[in-house]
Image 1 (cartoon, rainbow, N blue to C red):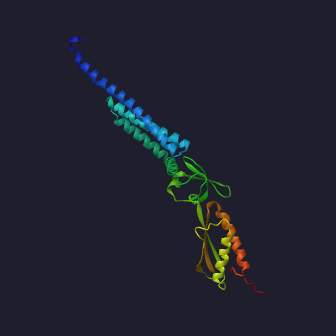
Image 2 (image 1 turned 135 degrees about the horizontal axis):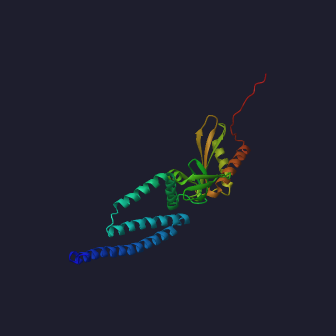
Image 3 (image 1 turned 135 degrees about the vertical axis):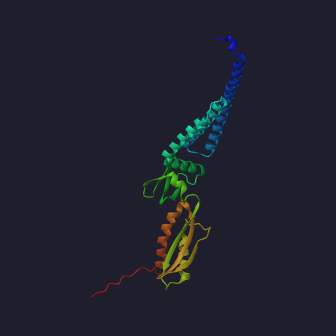
Length: 269
């Protein structure tokens, strides 16, 4: 080795240059890791307050953690002088390939996240969605399970559920029950109203406020139709629906008010 051609100052400058970069990268890694830890704790606290599903919490926290770690690694490599453009492009390509392969599953996962965050439904709610109706039994990351009144299980993908219309019958404490009673054209309108209202007033599950309403809604081909509305607690909906239908029929018969029905006349030879 020719010591005359050895430039010690050059090597000192290089050592200082790269040494500072390495020290800077270490500092960035330490500070970045601390910030990531704080962000994860804050995210977990928010999720706990929002009562997020445990499995969803773990998935989201891991997703946030590794996404931030990858970003931190790219920043550290850039600090020491490594070209990160191609590295980022490779990551983007891999992410795109995975996304395309799991497009349906990712859509269902995103739908599950939206449902758990905004909570349009919860376990125990009776809902109607995607042409199906039933009580929500389970809200998973990818699917939601309903139990129908006749005890069938329906599984709906969360992507379709979150993007479609949902009718939730359990959100409000009260519900309106609608009836239509048809009587013959010879019936007295005032008396018919009184009979229907007497049934309503006598039922213990029907609320007094809002008040019930009985009105002539239609002059049909063979009947005068009375549109009747009452309000009940949501858990009493079907009991009132069945009771009032039966009791009104009995009360109209007792009052001599005819309920028209089709008649078939048979000719005799």
